Image 1 (spheres, helix red, strand yellow):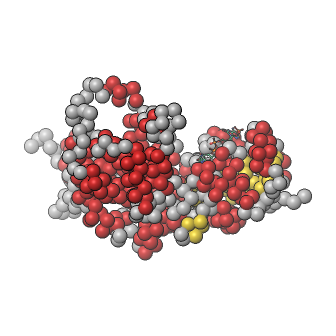
Image 2: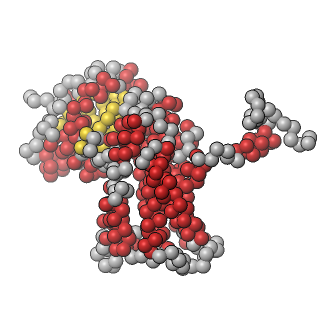
Image 3: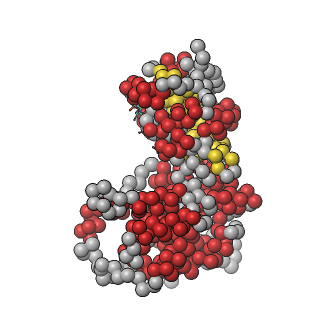
Length: 473
Ligand code: NBP
């Protein structure tokens, strides 16, 4: 019997599409899913005449694979992944490679990796981004774990990955959970860019009274320029999409609450653990949390006063405001990348990942949700200066900051004056203003801490640690 080159466990939307992608590159793929009907349906609808070998037990699945076995898990993260691994590990042999392509928490990946290594197995935490279409046509793949294991699967993974301007969007990032961690940061940045776009939409809609079609034109123009990327492209398409029931733009009929769980949230949790400043990503997570308070917001709209509503149109001309908005969004997006990459740098030190930040930017250039033209100069900046502390310090980003920060300030003044929330854009400006301030008011915080908790402080004029009996004075 011809053995399969690759095996996939989990045939929901991501698993099915990845199987078709791998098979399409000339490999024979064994497949297994807990619920047999899903496997049968998949084979009937997509597997006829293809090199796809269905298995209806894990024993059968393992038996069809050539060794060392190369197995990709595409099942729900959390307990379902553990349930599969508990059954799978005892069936495998030393040197077999198990890849978790799900959105697993990086700490869970560390635990599973240890357990796999105790059995002599190679375990890889593999972040996969790109959704259904990416899985089929080429996702962005962020792998981490045992280097020897990655060597065995590198050929297949690079073949199925998206092809970016700088090669296949697939990379090995380092030991442990580094791959899943890079995916977490990717998703954090994704949250921030999405929220920045949503804030721009709100400002154009409520501030300028623009129609969905007019806003679509703006996003189309932005997408054609330096901001161009998948999230801008889909925003234009969304704004032009009619609702078959009302005939108006469908987006206007969608309930205004967004979920915030999983990887996006974990990026902020990790930033807090590391003590790394990623407030723009955090504000995007909290903006979604606030959106979830629909009933409270509707009630508060009638109680908490703000500028007279409905919001008056901004006094600036449409054209001038939209131009400023473009600058504001550009800087917000850049700040999100800057914070995300900075967090990767800090996590790399803290967690021993030894990450190459240029590689992170390179694998995000195609296939994934945050793919964008800006990633090309971002990759170059980190390739030239691997220890760059913050993206905005390097060209061309420094020049973009100089050119656009007055626009960001103008947009925020308008937004605040008219009571339109812009948490992500505001946090981007506050972050950069904080970063470029040589002396922050944290001296007062230290004094307060010392006052109530004897936490001590340092002085600017001499070495040492000091404490003051504040009340005696
Ligand atoms: P889901 O995340 O919806 O997971 C469904 C799969 O998990 C099915 O194959 C299901 O089998 C299996 N499963 C469950 Br649920 N509990 C199980 C258990 N106890 N034992 C064995 N199998 C179990 O699928 P998905 O959306 O294709 O995503 C797969 C992975 O990829 C997830 O970790 C997800 O976070 C990640 N991811 C998703 C996307 C995306 O755009 N959807 C993008 C990137 C990464 P069943 O058929 O028997 O119920």
